[in-house]
Structure formats: C-alpha cells, structure tokens
Image 1 (cartoon, rainbow, N blue to C red):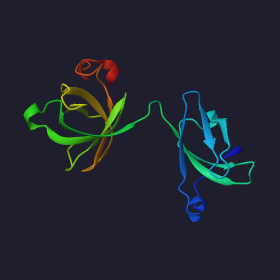
Image 2: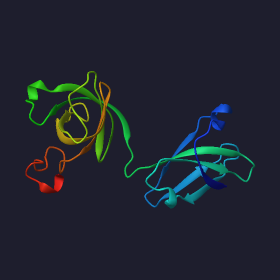
Image 3: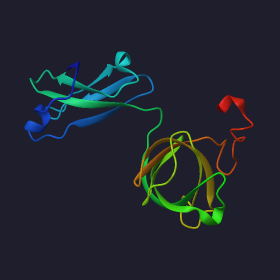
Image 4: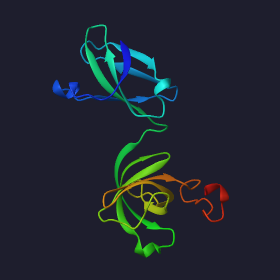
Length: 175
C-alpha cells in the first residue's frame, strides 16, 4: 500500500462506501487496512501532523480508497451523562442542565438545549455523576468551542476532579 496526501473527493461516496477514519498514534504512525483484500500496513504521517487530512491509499491488490486521518492527544469516549453547568459567578442553584455526550482525560463535550451567553475562553463549572451511585464530580472547564443552543466543547483547567485550579485572576500564566 502507498498513501498519498489528497484533498477529499466524492469518489468514495460515488462507490457507496463510507470513508474510513483512522486515528494517528502518539508516534505519528497509522495502520490502515484495505477493505478489499484485508492487507494492513503501517505508515508514518509525521509530515501531516497538526491538521486533519484525507489521504488516498493505493493497495497492491489494485484497490484505491480514501481515508481520513485524525490527530488526537487523547481519544474521546461517547457518553450520555446528565449534568449541570454554570459560570464561575453563578450560584449553584441557578445552574443549567446539560448532557455530557463525550469525554476524554482532558475535556468534555456538553449538549445544551438553549443558547447561553458564553464565548470561547470562558470558564464554566460542570457538575455530574460519572456512574449511578457515584459521588458528584465538579470540574472547571475552559470553553474551546461553542455552537449556540447545541454544543459546548471544553478543556479541563482544574488540577483534578473536585480540586479547582487557581482563579484566572490570580494566576498570570493563565492569561
């Protein structure tokens, strides 16, 4: 197999095949499997780092196909955990309901029903129970992306569950 960087095209969709997504390892390697013959091969994708890419792969069995590469430091896990969120200055009893739709060791993706007056780099307090019967967890996140009335993506800014980091006003490194 031989990978070549390529802009996404409609060729995969034309053949009724869904484009495959592959995650790049921390060593900047990816292992790709041919759907036709089952052959697998591992490639270095160092030159493509820091960008989402599609590449065309030409297999020795004469099959050509496109795959999407995704560079991540940590993998996200799908979830459906009810929770609440609020701004740092909002009292806990005025928190808004949300659902944690996926999470990783470094952050959360929250689903919300109504638009909120937030923007990128705002800090939010998120409360949830990871499992039924587990104690409630309170985490502090910084908003990385916001789709009004739909999704909030945030990265943790606290040191660990239940232990918030210093306030942004008191920590000049966080400005």
